[in-house]
Structure formats: C-alpha cells, structure tokens
Length: 211
Image 1 (cartoon, rainbow, N blue to C red):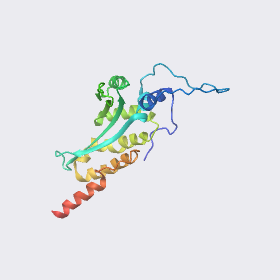
Image 2 (cartoon, rainbow, N blue to C red):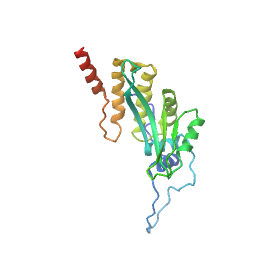
Image 3 (spheres, one colour):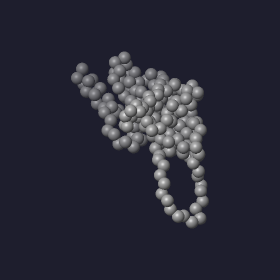
Image 4 (spheres, rainbow, N blue to C red):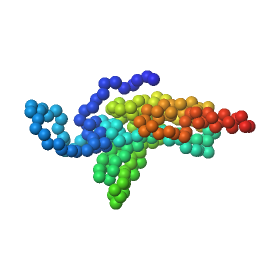
C-alpha cells in the first residue's frame, strides 16, 4: 500500500493533551529525586485542533466499518465506515471537538452522556463518505497508532469504492469486504466478526449451487 504519511511521528503537547483527555488519569507519587529536570509541564487548557483530535482518537477512538442488511442493494447488504470517539460523563471534551469539526465544515453526530448514570457515556460519530474524507484528511496525518494505517485503508481503498457504488453488486461487495477485513484485522479487540469476505463468498456460493 502506498504511504501518504510521514513515518516520523509528531507527538507534541497538543496530541498528548488529546490522548490524555481520552485515556489518561492524574496521580501523585511523592518521592525524593536528586537532579531531576522537568521536561514537560501541564497547561491549564489545550487548544482543540487536528492534533488534539488525533490524540483523542488514538487514546479512546475507534475506526471501523459496520456491515448490515440493506434490501435496496443487489448485494443485499450495506457497508458504513465511521470514526467514533467516546467519553464518560466526568469529562466535557466532545462538545468542544464537535464545535471544532463543525467550524471545518465536517458534520458529526454528538450524543451527550446521561449524567444521572455512572456508566453513562458520550459519543461523537463521523460518518458519510464526504464527511469522512474531509475528517480523515484533516486528522489522519497526526494519528500515531495503528489507526493511522486504518485511515489509509479507508481513504485509498474503501471510500473511493463506496463513492463509485461498487458495493451494490455482489462482485463489488466481496472485493470491498477484503479491505474491510484488513481494516478490522488491525484493531486490537480480537473480536470475531460474523460478516467477513469469507462469509459472503460462502453464502452466495451456496445460493448459486441451490438455484
């Protein structure tokens, strides 16, 4: 796969702030340290920009493709790529990210947490071919984890094929599922997924043999 991004990572304080807000905590461990030099310092407020959003995604974001039945297509199924960010009710970052992305012309869905429930969580979801293309081109170059490679797969392989509507036919759908499988294989959740390229090859082959 052709690489569009510089392999040298850029973990500056803005990316670090986003990552920390998504998947970090504050703790204090008193200790005597001789000759210790302070390299980083905490700042009271981080600027919300594309580096910050990338850090947040690397910390607690998800890049995925959902596959579900869709009778309107000849294939009978739909593929919906999306980027999802999550935070719990103790934080208030997603509305700020929402405003930042809106200022860039990117439409997102924001679901605020239920503050009356301890388990409540807020979600921000970016979906739609045009929106995702804008979002991934804006944030993708600053991702530092495996999600950078997932971004490349979406931009180079999946979104262009969805834009050309190749997924509405069975042949095009199976070709596209190869890239969906590749994208999902990079996730570290080790989840076994029902809808894979092999699944559709099997069920459609069985139906053809029966007809």
